[in-house]
Image 1: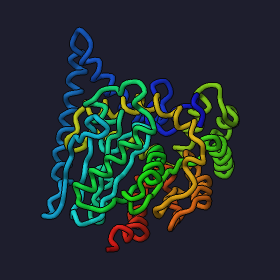
Image 2: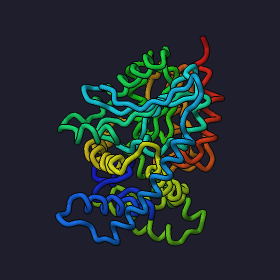
Image 3: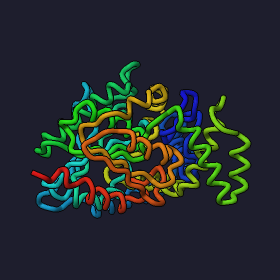
Length: 389
């Protein structure tokens, strides 16, 4: 993944959107309407204002319903969202589960900057019976960005964010009174996750990667080849034409990468899921329009600073020796972080225990699109590491 590409693991890059879906465009439109209403000298047209108010009434009703439906009511449960001082700044952390005695699971979101807190409350709700799920809006993302503003130059680095993640893990251990936690890292979060468990294996029972980032230098070239093979197998003439028109990477501008992203999302069935994120975020308990703005802005801010750093990582930094059990749950057809590379990663590393677990039909977003299957595998393969005395 080269530094001049469309932000490969971010929801939004200012000049080159990763997910050009109808839902994405709707979100951009809504945010633009809101920004216009707040920043222009004159008021918005009355008709526009009325329509926006009607939408806000609907969103408020859905939020109220979701507060009722997703509240944790068990006596030993926890449902906490708070700012915690991490790395010298206030960072947003949520902790939710039906029983504090369950293992703690720290989910490290992708992007960079694609905080999952704004919309994943529904996806992770079934997990809360088996795990206490912790989500963290990383430096430069989501509500952490919202309260602190854009990070000063030089502070949004992989090294600094790895340290942040370790502080979060320490906070979770103390809050839940656990010796260790399970770490799940998705996409960009799989880079932080690997670096965290390598730096402090004493904090973690196990590592689970999904949408696992392995080798930036090979990623897009291999993904392109697999997309062409898939298009030919489906006899999708439009996909074949567009992919062969741009040719294999590297590209001199963002067009080629945008074509790859378009067809990877369509072939993975991710276009519907990505659009649904917007509705979930708009109706999330406790969310305000500012939270949606911060969610989108964070992906631009984080992508600008972190994607070049990702592209410069040596593949050896991600692989090698691990002192904790390592699992990779990967969609069988991941055209964003190719499944083949993730399988090679598991084969190449050393760890006390390691497994590659294919998830049919999940693609790059298997953890969300096949969350029931993902949960079943977590319980079957990983949970026991956190429950053995």
